[in-house]
Image (cartoon, rainbow, N blue to C red; front, side, top):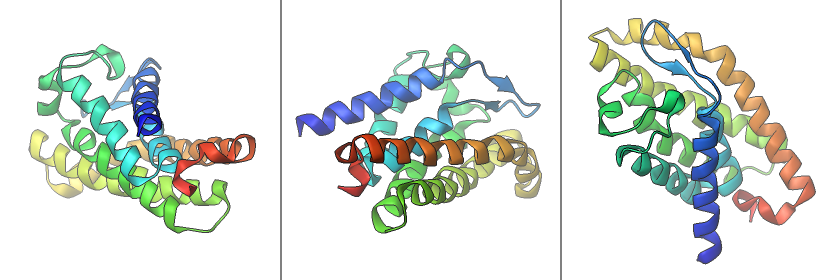
Length: 180
C-alpha cells in the first residue's frame, strides 16, 4: 500500500515537472505541452489503476490552485477553458494505456508505444475534441481539425514513452508495475 502511494505521488510530480517545459499555444487556446508524455508514462509504467490515480492526484492539486499546468496555470478556472476535454481525458487515457500494457505480451517498448498511441492519443483526443467543440462552439469536425495539430508531437511522445518504459524494464524489471 505504502509503495503504491509513493509511486502515485512520484508520477503526479513527474506530470507537474513536465509542465515546466515551455508550452506552445495554438490558435485554439490549447497549449502543446510535455505533460501528455507524463500521462502516457503513468499508464505504461504504473498500470491502469495506479496510473489513473496518479493523474487524478495531479488534477486535484491543479483544481486546488497549484500552478502545475504548463505556463504556471492552475485553479478551477482551467476546467472551463478550451483544454478542459484534455484535462478530463487525462485519467481515462492513463487508465486505458495501463490497461493495454497490462494485457499484452509484446516487448515493453512495442507494448508501451502501442498503449500510448491507443490511450494517450486516441482516447485523449476523443475527450479533447469534444471539450474543444463544446467550449469553443465548434462542430466536432472543426475541433478535430484543430486537434490534429498536436498529432506529430504526440506521436513522438508515444515513441519516447515506449523507449523510457523499455529502459525501465531492462534496468529495473520490478519497477514496471504494469507488468507485475
